[in-house]
Length: 145
Image (cartoon, rainbow, N blue to C red; front, side, top):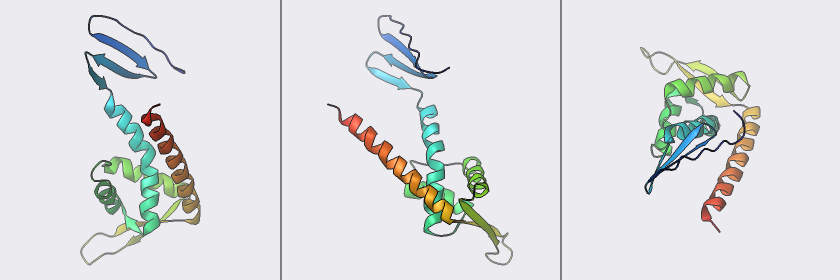
């Protein structure tokens, strides 16, 4: 489905609108939104930027990236391993990061450390610029008239 499809159902207290597969339901004065889907899209879009930012600061291993994202965002952005590792593999395949295995200490399995490449630095800069432009536009929109 492309474009916007709106359908209104009117009863005493209920109005429902369907916009691009997302349901926004107003019941009385409260708004119930499919927040989990919206949040998933935000996470998906910000995962690559978060990874590139962290490995751009210093080399890190996968679990360290996951905990740093959670800690630095105050738990707002908490990503599962199932989201981070595929993103790491994709970024590596695209040439934005590289990796190397390291033995940390005897008896502990080696860890795969990731670092940003020159191409990744350029990609991160482009993502940061787009993110700032988008965030500023939304902030202006939310200020109202």
